[in-house]
Image (cartoon, rainbow, N blue to C red; front, side, top):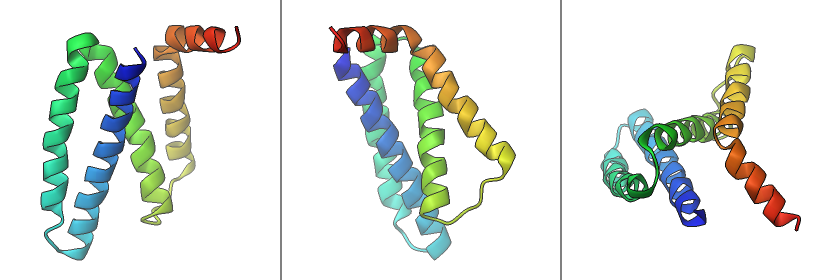
Length: 115
């Protein structure tokens, strides 16, 4: 199971990097977006591996919500974009949705860690 979480984490980081690369390329009018497209091909291959062992619904939700959170942090801290109070509340709800989706696994992980 930890292997799957590692793959999801790699998937999230790669997608955030791909989005950031494409955003950077669009802002600077260069061809770096080609690297972002290549990363999306790698993302598809990793997603295929994950879906062999996990359900589509939970995997997709976990992946998309986590990517939204990471890309938001990148856009705020790297690109200097502003987040209003509704956006901050939305990110808080996104974090809570991950906690609720993975509550059973997080509970098991914490109980194993404190034995």
